Image (cartoon, rainbow over all chains, first blue to last red; front, side, top):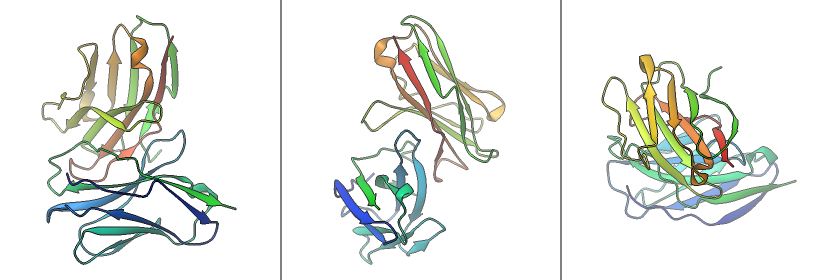
Length: 112
Length: 113
């Protein structure tokens, strides 16, 4: 699976949009971009994934650049409960690398 | 509940004892994974079950670790003769199939004294 690069930490004011970037310049055509997060003392939580089109669900939006070398996770109205480590990973569509491997992720702190 | 359920949530035991950790996956999910996570560290893959196929045991750190999945649903991870280095959070995840998003339980925090 391609490697990803994320900022170590970010702050966001409560109620504002949180935009978390991820670089995956070596992504191949058959790899999805996945986002997970892990709140302290909890298991990782799946957020969203996409291949090349932008995606939106009840939790977040995922914007993937046209060349697919980077993406942005958007939490439209961040709350204190969104404070967590956010992980961006890429994964083959065939699931050949079945196990997940998280990098260091971005520690998002939502400030009151 | 609708999510992955793990029990117990916390387990403290003495070195040398055996422990069993349980995972109830989301109903209908055919794939089940076990990981462990040490304090401040990333995920370490342990084992993967997919339907009736032979499990992928490539991540098990030693022969003291074993897992089974009965009836394609509940799974049990067993650690025999526990050692202090086995102390970690043991996480279970399930998905519809191997390539689909994995949904995690909150883990079992295992402490070996």
